[in-house]
Image 1: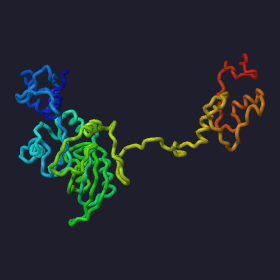
Image 2 (image 1 turned 90 degrees about the vertical axis):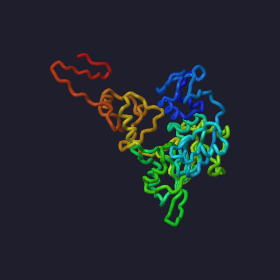
Image 3 (image 1 turned 120 degrees about the vertical axis):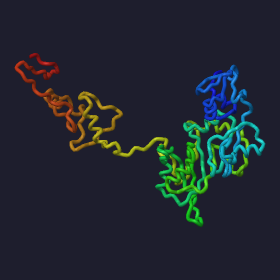
Image 4 (image 1 turned 60 degrees about the vertical axis):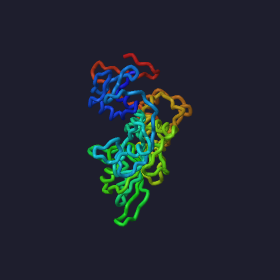
Length: 367
């Protein structure tokens, strides 16, 4: 089966899809001895010989899924040009030999949970914004944001000309520090821009003092300590694959939380009397005005409210009308009607105009 090269490299654990695209653009990937630089090129791992930097790509081996608590002072990458310590250094010291790469980013001064894997499909699922994978952070900021600031964070902040997606932000604690008050916030975001939480807090004038990621989708671990890691269980991996807008179970908001802006309450809504701008009496009168003269009232219609002229008497109680009364009724309408049923047509002009008004017997007169 033919697939795109970047997908093959990702599934084989060579690199993430984004990094695989970079390898292809740099001319480091060959297919059957021919260098490929065009993105979207398709190949088959079974039928074609695919090499990266001269090394043949083999089928995916045992996939690895690792949950790491990244301490502060480490870079979330496989290698750093400035030779700063990376999260891969922590895994190497712990005996991990498989090719894994971090999913998403967590900046140098932040700490918390991060997933590393050799599964390119899962990595793409967790990082693509359309899947809306939640990430929860505990954020300590300078000062105490007020209600207006929390609402701004919840609705979204414009960063570099683009507004952030709605978030769930809660003020959980106020701390009295030596240099002034500080606040502990709970952030839940569904996108992963570079230094997003820090830039959002800077935009409202409350810079971040400390930031810790405590949850990735459904995955959390309060017992893991900075620098430690463990393998995800099969159940945790399955939960990560399921998460997304269509099937993700969102965390119930606490009382007083600033939930995601724009969400609608499910279930039937109660209508308010007069919300449409028309009273019940006026709507019934308008419907009566549109009904033909000889139409009988529908059984499902509510009874007509009594007005100043009183309800219209029944035809059976009144008895049959004479021809003169019928003409008068059609012209003026029945007693209680607010709108005449018919309007008198303007007289025809001209010497040859003839009257077509029905005679008393209901048949037109011969002129």
